[in-house]
Image (tube, rainbow, N blue to C red; front, side, top):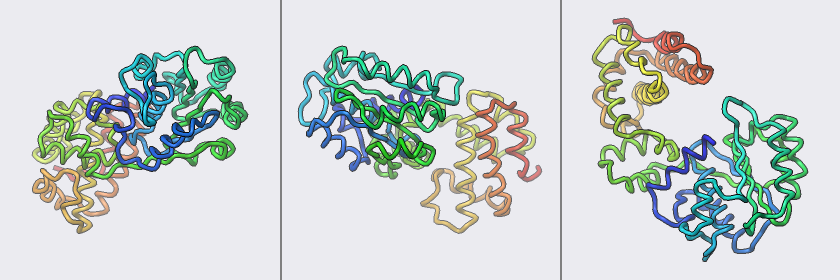
Length: 338
């Protein structure tokens, strides 16, 4: 349940009460609240938008509001037994489907299990909820098996499909669902959430609000203090030493490789902006402007573009568990010699 575990942790940085925790998704929120007010059931929703924008989080909050023991004003209390169990995914009438560990697809067996559950009476809930996260990864057989269920869910049930790419969802499924778009937050909205974390100072809030680029659900998975130090170490290694001699030092810890790739991408994205004549206010690494300006002089625009392309490929290499030597050789192919 990758998306859920990441996005649910955002909760500790924002206000209590279910829907008040959702920032920057006013249209989607209004639709969900109207559905609660009108007691609409037997529907399929399709939450779509970029990764990290709170789709899984909103699905959980909606599930709470549907079954809260003390629900008022189209929201949930967040403290009753139902809310607390839904928060932990331990509620008997909330069924959360996702990619199984080690699998790249949601299989037909998982959908058949869902269909069996949806045909049964609720164990204790007013409304049974069935969430299919990463629904773009349904196999063709699973998607076709799901068609009839999404068209006419039972009157005591709601189905929520979640995807990062609407184009990859079978059109016959998409057409049967009420689609809710989730957008990336702007920097001010992101900063508004991060300000709830009292462990951050103003400069750190400014950096993370730019670095996250509206994907607030990425924040809880970061060990922020380790990440800040990791960023310092990477910038020092990049700017103060020869990249060709310090290559393996930057990527010796495989657990930090993904974060290092993101940090490097933000750095060379900033260098690209400088080479293109953009204003420094658009840079992610605002506190490193002098260093980035100095580094930008070492590269042609073509070389920066090539490095960014190689960084993009490296994320794919990492997903495929290719060895770090191949990954780092790819990254540094276009770096200047010492």
